[in-house]
Length: 93
Image (cartoon, rainbow, N blue to C red; front, top):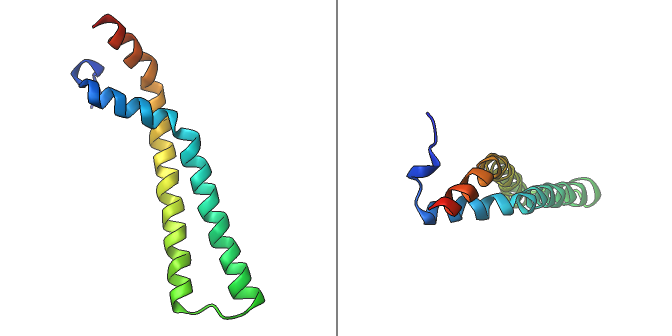
């Protein structure tokens, strides 16, 4: 499947551009959620030794959130490769 930027609306171009600009924010968010999850595991699992079911679920949700942010980072990296082409297309229309 080939993506042709001529078929994109202005709204779609703006979306891709915003996502590409937020690439570093997605990476930072991913790292932050994994650090928080690791901190909770160390504090409640190793120090207090009171890692129960609800805390375990919260840790899993944090790790899934970090994974989601990492996917957004990967997508934004791909979108940033289209950004120069999108900018030149907007200038010619």
